[in-house]
Image (cartoon, rainbow over all chains, first blue to last red; front, side, top):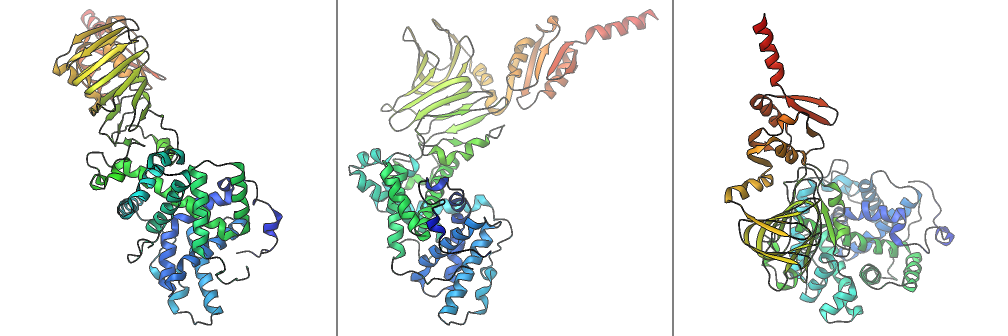
Length: 198
Length: 347
């Protein structure tokens, strides 16, 4: 990672105002190359951080750091970079809190995550994720499930969804928003004890 | 190196996520105005934690759409694992994207890439095959289309409407009957309305040919002429008239052999064979000798390539084959043999 100023960049305004979010190349890169590794990041954080209630915050902190670094230079190995950023964050937090890191802690491979080898069979992962999505859909409250189906499977706009569900547009939008967050936790956080937010 | 800042507890992660999700849902699905964009921009600029929360939502949505599409793509409606699910999901299941089944000879790569986008587009979709290609589309209601070589359709398949337009080529249809949601195929000015059917339609420059395999269908041409088709009927419609001939089950089978990747000919004139075979290939067979045209050919040809056919034809029909660029010229071999025989006799 290179030296870079941490203050002042935001106020420079470059790339921060007046653009459509994903038209920004770094943001698009982030959605494409980083978010898909969320499951592995979550596994790593859970393995190495005792306080489960802080995991989601840690994840977002890691993401913010990756995004900041990517603005300087897009990393060549997104997955490796993501995990190294997570490791560095944890080490720093531990140092800060004067906790002595466990030996395995600094080892990104401690989970048997082979970060430089090719992904396992993509189709296998997809099959697993589809099963996960199905299971998630089953557990959603009926209204939320309907909103997901209409939005993501039928691809309908919220005006139509609201009409079909006999709710206001705001309510339909809220349902979709909530459902998307739940799906994120289901799809990306694969620890068996925590399949869904309460 | 970045100075380390402690994890912010002043603004809980959940609150940021919720806000991001609201922005996201509204922007992706809802009415979205300049003022909304300004509000989002301002919020994103406040903190990278806001930005990554928003981007995460985009990632989740992309993944969800992708999986939904892949699922749709892989499982047939009848074998759908979603079928056991409660009505909320199954009711809205699977209409959005058709299934692409393995039997495609040319891999239709752009389609897969656009699966995610396809879910967010208006429901009029299109599909086509290249020369030599063949693809089966399957929809959530059980309806299936199979596109033969060099064919194109566009369609709107939903709970409320099932309309298909055949733009070119040949397509086999198996339509799940639904009296509440009729199926209409448009071919130029012709329409085929289903009454629960299996049929194959072929569009040529001048006419439309509809062969009915099962069920019943109504063929109409600009509302002027209407014919009720029953199994075995082979209707040819021009812009003004419809004529219906009967086909035997075997003839119908033969006409549909392309679905298994073969073409079947029984005492077919060679010029007709070649016209048919040429539909499947960029390399064209050309009859260079008119006397060859009327020769009769019986046999099966794979649609994949016609090398076997050429070898067979050369041997059985004594044909001569000359390759010239993208064309293969076919003429008689007999004269040469004769000349040789003549010369021998003369010696």
